[in-house]
View 1 (cartoon, rainbow, N blue to C red):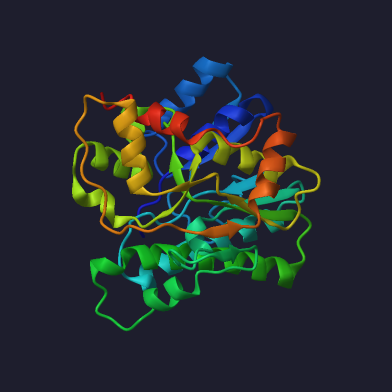
View 2 (view 1 turned 135 degrees about the vertical axis):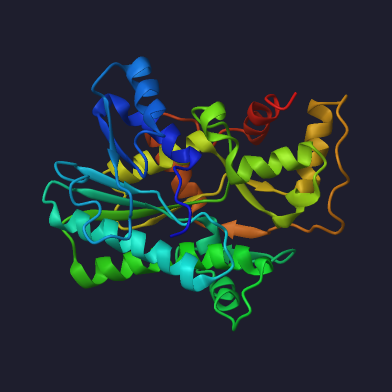
Length: 325
């Protein structure tokens, strides 16, 4: 089984939801005991429960975990970034289907929220205007992921995108076929920027790790193409809206806050940190010129939660980069 981790948006989400009571799953409760300690200290004992689920692919793996819950958020995925779709894509689908089958057995569940990804919808068009809509799927990435072997590491991003797209498609097919008693929504974040709950315990994660690579003049940051970005807390809030907003029903919520290119970010960072030396931007990087038709809807959901809209891009960037200084 590929690596399955809590991503940073999950922990930010827990901060917002703990007052209502949260049950989270991990593969190793001993290793992750700090999570319970953190939230007990911050919100008081009894607000957060940690359940060990060693294998999300096992039949009924989440049956006990969802008992008595009013909402289920499925955020785990195969984050091994391996190149073999027979492993990564199949894991992602199996995890999602297992969570759905557990949720449909539990009458108390009213909402099911899936953490999808921008890569599930993005067509990878650059320097060309296009509409990104709730009907958009990453067909090019799926085709590239399932191209004949050998499975070399250079297809890892296509395989990851296919895993998110096909897992989300499997959810919508399940909803159509079974007409469950709960409402289903998906959240599609793009590049997530912002700090986790515990930098010491969690590290920077995939997205912030690329920002760290840029800071350290490590060319690994160039692996990602132009895209949009979103703050980690806004990602969490949109998950919360998907769980609670009465009018959010069976929809894809696009967490696309601001257009992002490394060229632009390097220019902004030079102004923020004039004494630091940054690498040259990628040559002819281009830009993602998507008209994200779902962005206004996401902004409305954030305002429903009492926010003004998406967090400014430079605030998210500075929050992370200040830890590098």
